[in-house]
Structure formats: C-alpha cells, structure tokens
Length: 297
Image (cartoon, rainbow, N blue to C red; front, side, top):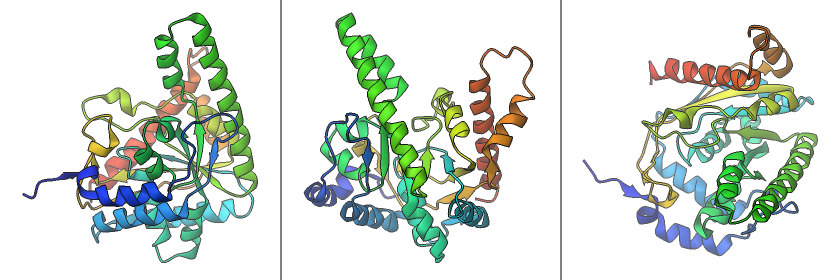
C-alpha cells in the first residue's frame, strides 16, 4: 500500500503559492470578523479537493439541498449544521455543490459563510491562507476563552481577554445579521472541533448552537461519510491526505422554530439544561443520518 503523505509533504509547493496570494488578517478584532472568500486561494483548494475526490463521490439528499436553496432565495434565513471530521469537510462540500451540474447548487456554494474560530487566522500563515479560501465569520470560541483565562497570569489579563471575546463575538453577531440580509447561508460545525477517534467528547455538540436555531428560519443537517484527511495531531499540516470517496448528505429542510418547540416540549418539566439537550438531539440526528448512509457507502 502506498504510504500516505502529509499535507505539507504533498502540497508544499502549493502552500508557497497560497502564501503569495494570501491577504487575510493575521490578528482578529471586532473590526475584521467578516472575512470574505479569497478567490485566488479558493482555486488552489479546489485543485486539492479535485485531486483527491474519487469518482464515486456524490451529494446525498440533493433535492433537499435544492429545496433549501429555493427557500433561502425567497427570503428564509438559512443555517447548515454539519458534521466535522477533517479540515477538508467544508472545501469538499463547497466543491461538490459548485460542480454538481446544478446552477442552484453552484450558487448555494458561493453563498456559504462558515463560522470559524480565531486560530485559523492567527496560528500560522499557511493555515490562514487555507482558511481564507472560504468566506467566514470569525468568533472567539468559548473553549478558547476558558483556556486563555486559565493561562492568564493575572486577574486583569483574564478580564481583558473576556472583554476581547465579548467585543469579537458581538461583532460576529452583527456580521451574521448582515450575511442573512444578503441572502448568504451560515454554516456551523456544531461540535466546534474535529472528531478525534477514541475521544467521544469531541463529537458532543456545544450548547451555544441552540442560539443559532433561534436566530434562523430553516436548517439542514449535513452528514459526511468518507475521510480524505486523516488527523495526526493539532498541526493541520501534519494531517495525512489520500484520495477518498466522499458523500455529503443533506437532511430534509427543517423549520427551526417548530423543530425547537416540538423537541423542548418532550423534555421533563424543570430540565436543568434544555439547551444542551436540544443540541444533543441535533447530534443524534446527524449520527443517525451518517449511520444510514454508511450502510450503502
């Protein structure tokens, strides 16, 4: 069997070219949370996906993607909640929509704005150039704030970090509102991180996702079957890449308000954490969808 190469080993020359066209901010504050797609770097990412997408790859629930698009283009505020196994999940979905042969789905690809953590911009120039291939609203994740507060050497530093997070996330909320007004679609990974085998906590949804369900009209759940990029450690450039059959599947379109209302009504009176229960339910639905596709994968 041919040895798998890391992203850096296989695409070092591409990353050099990516760096030349990169212009995204290296530091995030409340003034630059909306990061529009860099079309030049997107072309490189499309090439990477194309070279590693096996011919049997396809979109599942294609009609659901189209119904979602139709609703968004007639004024509905649209949300995508998507499984997260690797840093190629978003590039693969956007590429497959773009090259689906449907102008509706190609336009949907161009309308997607992902919610992304600050570290994609701030950790390294290469990761930043990778990330800016896609439109993003950048947030200060709760997990990062907790870690940074714990690492703060003084109470004053911890308070400064909390204020920074508050400013960035308030600006991100306003940026999302602007996206919705433009008819763009917000994509969120509800686990907030890539799934790491043997670490089930990385597949648990974040309770903050419940607020997205309250802010949008409709949602589709997108499951991912197949793995093009194998996680090695926290350095994305060490991930191992190999051609893979990928299936991105959409659920039927869900009306957010009714969905929340019906599920919350099933919880016992006095439930201590209804927001977490709500997102646990979403993750259960995503897992069931993933498992169903896996049967015929």
